[in-house]
Length: 284
Image 1 (tube, rainbow, N blue to C red):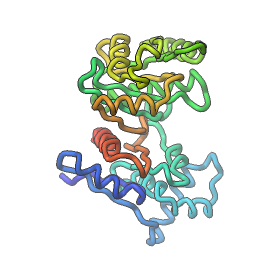
Image 2: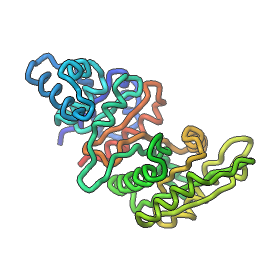
Image 3: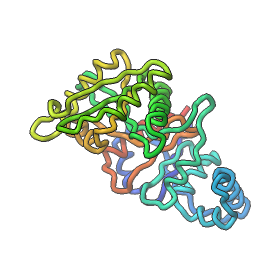
Image 4: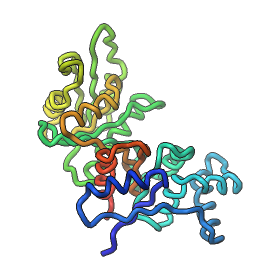
């Protein structure tokens, strides 16, 4: 059986090669698609990009210009079945646009950005994370959490449950966003909510990932929690996970038609290896 191919932006080649060394064999093949020279392939990719960007009114000239973006080419290669997955680079100008052209799987209402924390020694050894959305508020957050929970189940992580986490502390004690999220989740099916006084979860001024995971596990017994915590910075949580000996992956494009992820060229080999490992689990 042939090794799966991951199409990726050129800026990610070296860090991805370093990350692959941390994965067990057989390892995927990394492919950095060049600007197509063959006219029919070039025209096919232009049209594919235009179709996906129809709402933006993309012109043929704009589609041709988009092909010069390495993340766009990586995505188009995967959509054109020249690769089984795509890894886009945050440094590329059109990476966000490329991410947004992905369509949801049948039955999914949308796609969502999913981060995954693994804490083998914690009461919740696996936890999903979704950011509070820039637009759409509690409604959009609830949809993203449910899409992310379904993705974790699709990845073989077991039953997953969305969780609204209100991580508060100090004088500022407005629970409006977390409360709105909790209500939106409850209206759409099984979910959990949890309110924690954050200073109790810090040691030496740093967040204790295992302590937080213990509370989250208790709120979602028997399930993989998928959290949205409007007042907990994502990078603070990610750093706490890694200090505790865990791994941090993502974002993965949950609920999307193909396996796709986004990475920064400066990402550590550990983070990139975790992202690649979860990306590969999405493949048939």
